[in-house]
Length: 259
Ligand code: PEP
Image 1: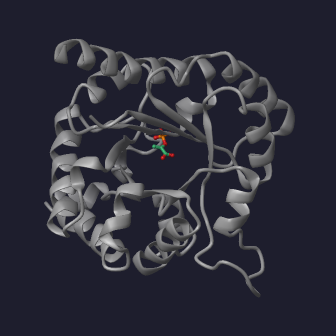
Image 2: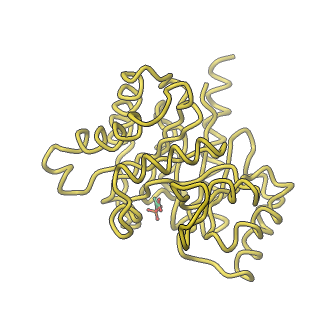
């Protein structure tokens, strides 16, 4: 059984004081009860988060990583630097980086490789725009995004990767894919991964796009939705805790059904 994973993407939000207030609630929040939980603050606050979350069971990740390990690359942050700070995962290819900062498919693929080489778990984001979905191109777009990564990565290392299906029309918009729509795409992604020879059954596929405390449980009920990448709702402790509780509730129900 794949363990559920809930990841908070703080995007360009936070300050030392605000983060401290939020992260202190995480310390005894029992968020990671039977599931994995990570938060991804901006680079400048990673060390603060690692320190404040040390005893919480909650991991810390970054929102991006350089495709390069070292050298004359002004402004870049390498995977080794992230590991050095205590990070265990990194979001790669978020749609905002793809659309605003030039992260093309080949760049994203090189970042995934760099993350894997440094021992970080890459959380590879894929997803289609509204018009691509309306034109019936959603699967084709997602397949192309996956394909460029699969072509560069040793399939035996792919089980360390997490995929986040994030339909762009659902990110930060309040629109959410229905659990059925998300499940269909997650099955497509899993089968696509399996078609490359990788063990698609062990790879966790998260859903992202306006996940909140009201819709999380019905998404997590789908058997191929292994958790969530959460933007806006991860900045509010009670909302994030409720999403984590929904994920851990599904785990417990699943365990009971198996007994
Ligand atoms: C995201 O940032 O990846 C995201 C899904 O944002 P939101 O939950 O706010 O839609």
